[in-house]
Length: 494
Image (tube, rainbow, N blue to C red; front, side):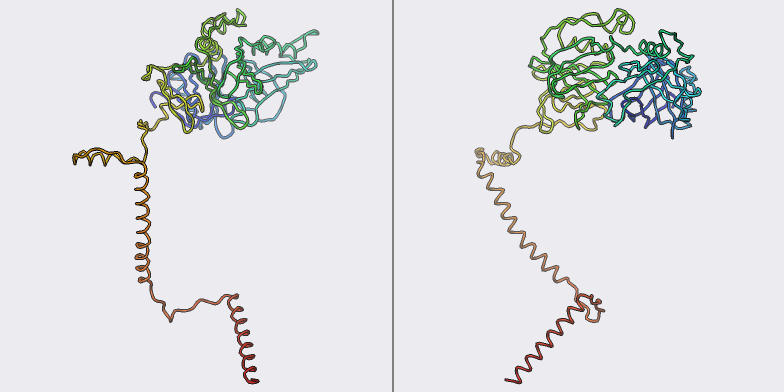
């Protein structure tokens, strides 16, 4: 391709498992779309810091590091794809991909490389494994030489994979030369402090930035306290507690209800959260439209001026659904979709409709349709193969009065509507007549079939007699001979 390369069956790796999709590499950057719609990853050329290649079992892995510290891993490339993409990155993007080697020795001792928000464990200059520091929720010392990293318990992680990484422990002896310490501060403490500074964990990291109390959530149903943290949001209810990473938030929808004082805020997730055996890809929140709130963010000035510059403000005042959407968009980086130019006959943003047996409203958006509230269903225009608009007049499906009216108008007579009893009797009479005719037709067909039977050939060889029939016939002959003998003796005596 002159304008780039297109690859199918390319998987995006992460803590939530591997998701297959389609990858397009063009001079402007990289675009990956999940198979079947949903999550999409778009990286601009100017945001790419480095590109790496690694040989993994049965395939090749492409690693892309961006300015924000994120690291994307795409798996599923052939050997010839590596050569083509390497030349394309060099000539079109001006990037020289590096080659990494995977350690297969099985050793569990080596060196730790902290680059951006990635922790890489190296064994003899080869990579053994790597973990994202953005997923680290807490660090703690165990003794003087052990450091334990605990990862976020994300309710969306187990949607694709049964197992997920929960914690990992590092043993750093006092003789370590990479993290040099002293008598009061051993090397393990130096390693822990460096991870805390890069992962933004600790006492301040667990504190909620802002909390919204008593929010009505329709899916999953209940009233929850919504806490927005630096790297995740938490839904705390009386019976359920959900923790969702911002990396799982795909898009936000702000949809006002027609002629009602409520507004929907939908958080679309990929992968979805799980409650029992039920998956929830959309969290449907319902806010009062005219309710005004004032919120102060628990963030330091340093974070507001660096990481969240032009994204968040120290305080917000306004309608609750707008304040919630603005803060969540600033923390997660997700895009917000609002109703477009569509207006109904009642000047609303949606139309009443039903999905199977559930009644709700359908929002025609610019690039999709959204049915709410239950079950929340997002239909993208890209996935629509056919669109049929059918008008329901509300008439009876057995109403055939149109033909009778046309006959009456032609003859000049008055139009009379048939009664319900007559309309019900006519079909039954026709069924009875048809049922009476069927046996006659069946008899005629049966007689024809009987006439067409072929005569048996008397000289045709007979089938061999089975063992059961042979012994049964022998038993019948014995019984018949005994009866004949007794009858002859009785006749003689008589």
